[in-house]
Amino acid sequence: MPIVTSIEILNMKAKKLLEGKSNVIQSISFKVNASDGVYSKQLTGTQSLTFDSNNFIEWADTTEFKDKVIEWTKPYSDELIAACVSDVTELAKEEDETLEFTE
Image (cartoon, rainbow, N blue to C red; front, side, top):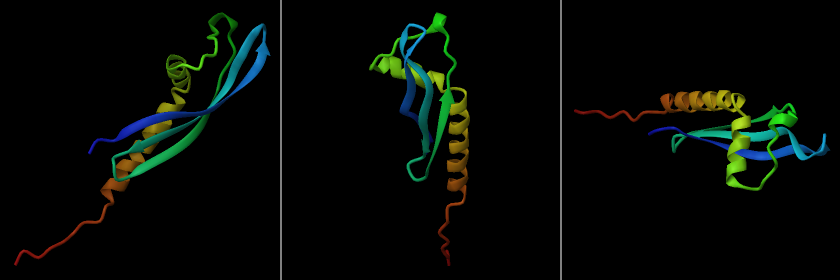
């Protein structure tokens, strides 16, 4: 069975006002998950951001902005997903087996 992965944004810490910009996100807390339908593994992480007024994206409660925030968690979230996938793969290998006599 294939391993399915996901990233969930838990929360974001932001400055209300910084250099004339509102809701400047400074860190993102997130959870990653990997599951094969039987086994699953979750890890959490926090990604710090550096403010750049020239590339600032205004906060919006939209799917598109959420997708952008998920991009900002990379490559750290990718590392955590890889660790989760590895753990799920190992758990599946360690599964007990059923032995039966054929005679």
